[in-house]
Structures are given as structure tokens and as C-alpha cells.
Length: 165
Image (cartoon, rainbow, N blue to C red; front, side, top):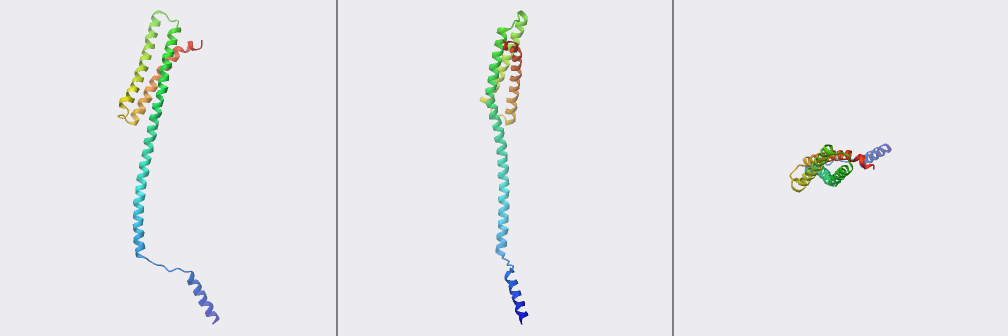
């Protein structure tokens, strides 16, 4: 009898901690609906992520364009420097006659070319800024800046001997 009580006690103790599997058909249907909804939400989230990623890329491009526009101040500064260098060179040079005339023509062409590049940039900003793609604008600004910088470096070379005085 003692063994029987011990055996019954052990069985009852074990059954208290065990769980009975309950199958709820409604819960399974709800789970399926929730999974479908979650999948749809995940798809929407992925689309939103791609949209945000694309927007961030466009923002970076626009940000670089704005930076390029701010570089217009640098271009104007370079243009002023070129004019200063040409004036200094023409005032202080010892060249006479035909050699001086050739240098005057070269300097005049440089200043005119810088002016045309600045005018092209100004025209793009006034008229064609939004009709160009981001890449076209960036490439255009880079190309014009490079052209101006090259010409200014020429005028620096002309004026350098006279800057030390």
C-alpha cells in the first residue's frame, strides 16, 4: 500500500507539470492571417527602405551640386586672381615691341576665356540648372573649374617673378 501511494503520488506529481496540447483552429487561422499581414508589411518596409536609400543618394548628389555652387565663389576668386596677375605682369614686365604684343594678346585671350567660362556657368545656373541631370551639372562644373584653374595657373606663372618684389 505504501508503494501504491508512492506510485500514485509520483504519477500525480508528474502530470501536474505536464502540459496538454490544445489545438485551436481559430488561432491557426489567425496566425496564418498574421503571417500574411506581416509578410505584406515586410514587403512595404523593404520598398520604403529602397525609397529612402534612393532619396539619400539624390540628397547626396544635390548636396554635391550645392557644394559645386558654393565653389562658384572660388571660381570668382580665381578670376580676380587672374586679372590681378595679368595686370601685375603687364605693368612690371620688361618685354618690348613684338614680344610684348604677343604676351598682351596671350593675356587678353586668357582673361577672355576665363570670362567665357564664368559666363557659361552663370548661364547654366540661370537657365539650364534644372534641365540638366545631376551628373551633367557636376561634370560641367568640374570641367569649367578645371579650365579656369588651368588658365589661372598660367597667369601665376607670368606674374610669379614680379610677386616676390
